[in-house]
Length: 327
Image: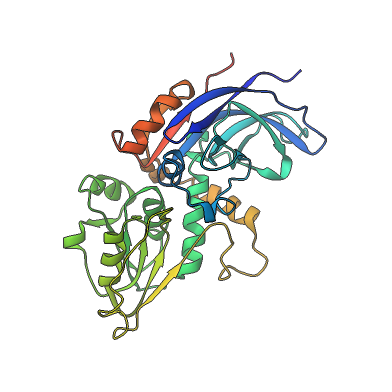
């Protein structure tokens, strides 16, 4: 008999609960995973928690192992790290990452898990889904040596992008955020920081991740002629107004979208989702990325935690959820 499991469900917008789960017996090509950690992706998950997914995006926004439908009740999430308890012999006892909702144990196909490299702590591996988004964004953006680059928005995605860009040779990089406290995160990542008023202009490339109209407007203002903004934010049910009648045409600016649901066409031919996730986990060997994890709570606290994360009472980049040790 499989051990008992519990999962976090959004019962109605703004309200969550833990529910008991009956697990199936794993098949020949499946694994039983016991969760060690999961991560709350504050941007998307808090939007889901408040019921802000537009009806037109209900199918597009489904997570790989989501149950239920938007707006609620729904089991949602996609940053889970655990240890394989049952499955193929070569995987038993291995730490794996899976795009699974917050749940103490789960059964998924072998193809849905990626082995976490030994040099990457399980507690840091919850960032894999976010770093994967950053990898795809940089494939789309195609930065070049010597570029003047800004990342506008110092949330989880923006900081992940900045952390990867900090490794590029010869670029002049700045993280821009309205919250001066993000300067400490930027320092930990080895990146220059500025508030929007102080931000450097004449940028060749700006990656925008603030999910605000003001941030996107400022991103366009920072561009040099022929410059590009790569938009990483997702606004849910909010409309955004932009000053496209000012210098947008005369400076020949470009605004383009990047979304992790499709592997960037700029990636080398043949690269798929599995290779992108493996790369993201390899990149997490850098301990500087620990700066993106700004809090930790027990799984039992998640129903009370989510409203506080959604309201901003608890400021967070990635908030890590810790699961109990069965011993």
